[in-house]
Image: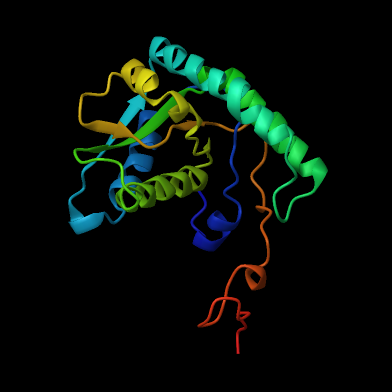
Amino acid sequence: MNTDLFEIIRTTRSMRRLKPDPVPPALIRQVLEAGTAAPSGGNMQAWRFLVVRDPAIKTAVAQWYRRGWHEVVAPRYRSGAPAPGSSRERFDRMLAAAEHLAEHLHEAPVWIVPCLEGGTHTRTSGASIYPAVQNMLLAARALGLGATLTTLYLLFEKEAEAALGLPEGTHSYAILPMGYPLGKFGPVARTAVEDVAFSDRWGERWTEG
């Protein structure tokens, strides 16, 4: 188990290729506990975490994921340019990994589906669920588990949430497929802080001075 927080943050890559080996329940619990340690608006803790291991449920949801990938997301990515801080080669590797996830999502040994009970989707809703998601991703990395955050299935939100069996008034915000990674953890590729941070006024380059 890795306990160096900044090393964990620096090396928590999106791991889209996962082994089918089952994940011990004790590790899943540790990941969930990390999620429940996150802040939420008013400390209401309206989050609910659906842990999916049932192959039939995963297969039913994954069909909508694949459709979203093939019909909408893959064509858009393939016609676009690499993200900032990335090369064409790295971008192509990311696309290949995303394609693999689309075809093998149902094979991930465990999904964690973060949800919120009550209310409606707003710009501020994510503030009460995505901190928990990031905590769980970092916890998974610390435990040697690969995971990624994906919302692609929400292109078919009603159909996918029906397949997940979510009750009325409860909405999912992502799927975190999780398992032992086929690849290796490593430094994430990102743009430099100086290119994205401003000092006091928009456009005023941030410096340490």
